[in-house]
Image (cartoon, rainbow, N blue to C red; front, side, top):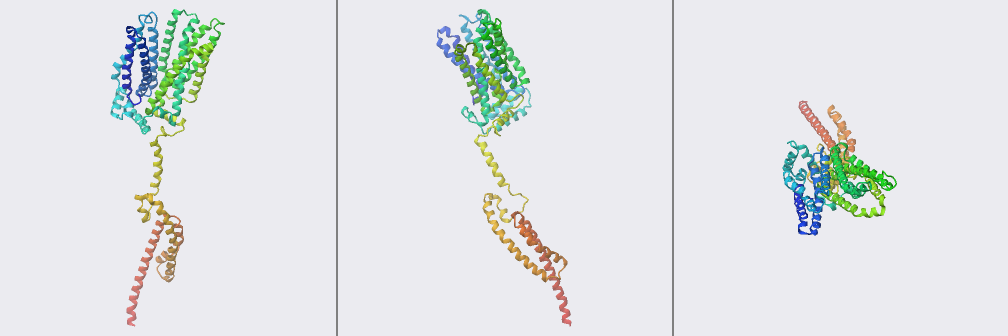
Length: 537
């Protein structure tokens, strides 16, 4: 189920469901009760597979606005199957010496119908895109399911889910228990699936016949009342299909478990007082019906739907295996222990189930968020906050390396492009890892700069004293040079400021050089003019 296609798993499961049905139907002919035992074992395995794969398959191919309604449909057909079995199990129909092999054999009919019809249905689009990496097949499946061609929004949603868990791969059951980002999701499904069965639903059905008899229902008519209870179960589950997208999953769970808790408490009181108050047996029947209504409204259909919604593709199949195991183990525990509990506690037996319902209600109120109308990614971001993580799967090794890569970026982006760098540092970008070593050598050169600049300024001062008669432009240039030492001292404080200061110094020196050259030319011309006059004298 983990890595196999959903539809393929169901098709294979149908084959294994038909075989034990045929064996049970022929068990009387071969006079072998061992065949019935073996067949029942195979049927149980097939039931366990289908009860997990069907809601997962429907949840993955459903649009988010119908995911709740379609997620309740598997439970609806389970209740329909129970009702059909109760009707066919009437003594007047197949629950007799001649009809019981047929009653066991008809269990293969639903599997045969699914085996014939399921090939015409598409595979899960999420499975095709996320696990098979086949976007065209996923797009084609979505178009068939939706009935229109514009499915890019849903394709993008699935891609986002795929990107969020791309590095995670398949998450096994063992890994599921180790990942911190799935901690509260895992706790939630264990509590919900355990609470579903430990709430006493099977004990109510086991005990219902005795309650009906104590209320005065004739023994021959108890089977009809039981079938009526099954009809109520179907009716309320149909109601849940229509209200799950209106009230939400969380509200139905709170309402359902609260009703079951109240029904168990009142039923306990009615059983204690039924020998002293004449109408208490009728109250017991009412409590059974109210309990069935409450359980069909939330605890029965919603937990399997929640598993689909709170887990992403890579962990969903493992989550269903955990949830299914808890479900059937709890079912087995109640069926095994309830006769001993009933013998030991008598009418107070249902107080235990009432306590389980109360604790589950408190857990739902404190932990389970509303998932109605949300995408799988939005739901998982909600649980990420509860798990105190920022990523869906932060424990993944590849995802852990991402922050380390990001830490290297500031070293590469340390120098802005617009800064003019010395020649040595301009050669460094290709080998940036060597920067720190060369940068340590620069301060030594920096210390020598102020002394050299001081000597230059002293020489310039001497020149300025000897050139008092120079033009005003040269004087202003020299005055600017007097201010250079203090400016250069401040410039030596940081390497990034030196290039600009040195450039201004070079420009001033160039101006002085040009001015001196011009003065020299003027003096030379004056000497030329003076030399003829001197010769004439």
